[in-house]
Length: 330
Ligand SMILES: Nc1ncnc2c1ncn2[C@@H]1O[C@H](COP(=O)(O)OP(=O)(O)O)[C@@H](O)[C@H]1O
Ligand SMILES: [Mg+2]
Image 1: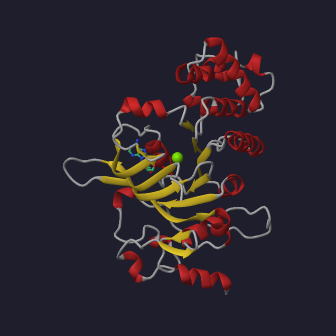
Image 2: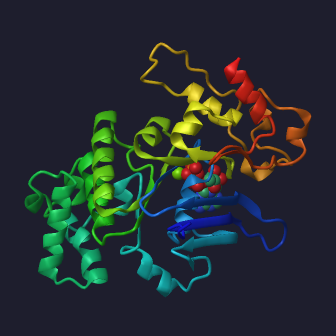
């Protein structure tokens, strides 16, 4: 078995409180991403998806810290790596795309110059060569008339074009791992589809792996081969997308699938998940989903359920996963 490109082990992220107990936001997360793999992370808002990506990119907000665990990139430990060394990885090895490009783009610098900055700094290209590469990258993302558009400021472009600029920027130094945080959520559905296509094609060409965060199951289905489902800072189910979607073994995953529109079965009733997302500040002893779960038994509120391999490569943290399986068959 080759070394994974990224190996996250028992990652715990939270807020350290010197007097009193730490607030845990992301709890004991483990997953691997292989070279060129497309790995989706799904879950409702607040489940800890963005903080997980930000921990990998060393972009955690002030006050939020990796409390324990390990993030191995190509075998090198990122947790505790000196900042200067780690920053060298961002761009040529790891790049990140955010949901709202306006917050990531500098409003007063022309977009071509913003894309060219990485190749100048990390690949040592001359100003002219870096701008040529920027324009080439813009063309690859499907931006019409890229040489002219390179001179535009971000506010002069549409949301779809701005997200293409972000993709061009993120891929300009040829990263091996692209972290995407809801990159198409702010776009309307047709543009979303086009931008995803561009992203997939460019990752195919360059062989970059994707860690793709979204709350949208249809997007994961289109884009990813494998996924992890997060709930309240835990991975509650993981495996190949086709296995998890066809045979969900955690009631939360099943709830997500039942509450999302299915284009293959447009007449199917949508069933919302009852209750509210959990309050992270008031963690309970057992499964965080238990208060909302139709399958919950007493044991679910006593201890966090172990993660079980329910089928080859398919894991679920639910002690009732067999019953759910039988329930689906019945
Ligand atoms: N800057 C911050 N300071 C304190 N808590 C935060 C901060 N950012 C996020 N959190 C907490 O972490 C939880 C998970 O955040 P996030 O990773 O952004 O969720 P997601 O991306 O899944 O919507 C939030 O519900 C919030 O409680
Ligand atoms: Mg988020």
